[in-house]
View 1 (cartoon, rainbow, N blue to C red):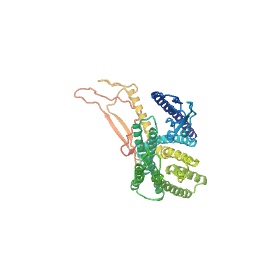
View 2: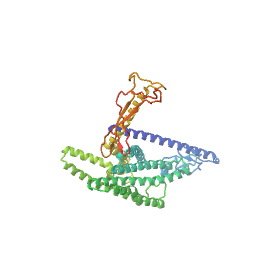
View 3: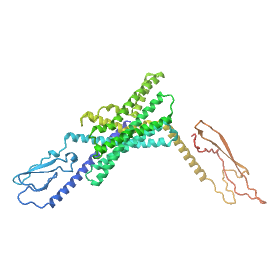
View 4: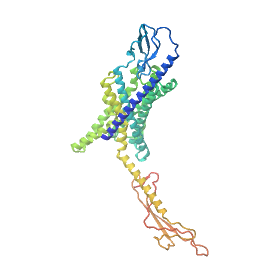
Length: 500
C-alpha cells in the first residue's frame, strides 16, 4: 500500500512539473504574438512631427508616440496569465518635457499576491483530482465489465453496484470533459467561433456534471437503503424495490437539475455556467445532495449499531470483535460516502475565499471524491470473494481448454497417414487390427444450478470391414492406437457449468 501511495505522489509531482512547463510555454507564445502585433502597429503608424517621446515596445507594453508633458496610458497587455482579472486596468507612463519616457506604472495590471497563491493551489488541486478521476475511471470500467460478463454474479446487490459504478463513470467523464472544454474557452489563441462553440459544449458538460454528481450521491443513498433493508426487513420483493431504486438513483436528480438549468439560462447565462453569482440558485443543486448525505449518515449509524449487536451475540473475543467492527465500518465509509459529512456545513457563503478552512475543505472533497470510485471498485469487485472465485473458474476453464487443444494438435501431428488401398500401421501398435474395434469415450456433464448431477455415458463405435460382393477386399480402415483412456467433457449447456 505504501508503494502505491508513493507512486501516486510521484505521478502527481511529475504532472505538476509538466503543468508548470506548459503554462510557461503558453505565456511565451502569447508574449511573442503580442510583440509581433505591437511591432506591426508601430511600423504601420506614420511618424510624428516635432518633439515626442518615441514609440516603442519595452518588452511589457506597446507605447505609441507621446507628447511632452503628458501621461500616456495603454490597456494591460493581454499575454498576462491573469489578464481576465485586470482587463479593465491600464499601464501608464509620463512623457517628460524633454521627450524622455519616465518609468512605467503597472500597479493596475499586477495580480494580487493572495489571488496568485490561491490560483496556484487550485491548479495543483486540479492536477490531483484529474489523476484521481482518471484512475477511478479505468478501475470502474474494468469492474463494471467484470460484473456484466459473469452472469452468475447478476443479483440484486451487484445490480445496484453496477448502477453505482456507472454513476461514478459518468461523473468522472463529465468532469474531465468539462475541464478540457473550460480550458479551451479561456485560451486566447482560439478563434472567436471556436470559443463560442466551446462555451456551448462546456455548458452541456456542466449540466451533465451536475446531473452525474447528484445521481452518484443518490446511488450511494440507494446502497445505504438496500443494506439497511437487508438487515432490518425479513422478506421483501427485490424486483419491486429495484424499480424504486432506479427511480431514486437516475430519476430524482432530474427533478432538481432541470430547474437549475432554467434559472442559469434566464439569469446567469454567462461563460460556462461554472461560476455561482447568485448562491441561491446554487442551493437548488446543493440542498438535495446535503439531504442525501444526512440520510446516509443516519443509515450508517443505524447499520453500525446493528452490526455491534450481532457481533456481541456471537460472543466473540474482544479483539476479534473490534477488528470485525472496524473492518465493517471502514468498508462502509466509501460505499456510503460518509466522508462527505465532515464538511457538510462549511459552505462557501460562511468561509472567506482563500482561507485555510476553505482550502482544507477543498482538498478533502476533491481528494476523496476523485479517488472514491477507485476505492469502491477495489473493495466491491477486485477483492470480492465471489468475483475472485468466478474469475478463477474462468481461468481454469481457459487453461484446460488450451491444454486439451495443445494435446490434440500434438497427438494428430504424430498420426500416420493412410494411403489409398493400403493400411499404414504404427510400430507401437498391434500389427493386425481386429475386425471389430470399439472406441469407448467416457465423459461427465456439468453441474446444474440446482446441485451437482453427475452421470456416466458410454459411446461405442464399431469399425467393421466392408463386405464386398464376391471379392475379399478391405476398404477404408481406421488405424487407432489407444494407449490411454480418453476423457471428453461436454461444453456446458445453457444454465449449466462445467466442474473443473
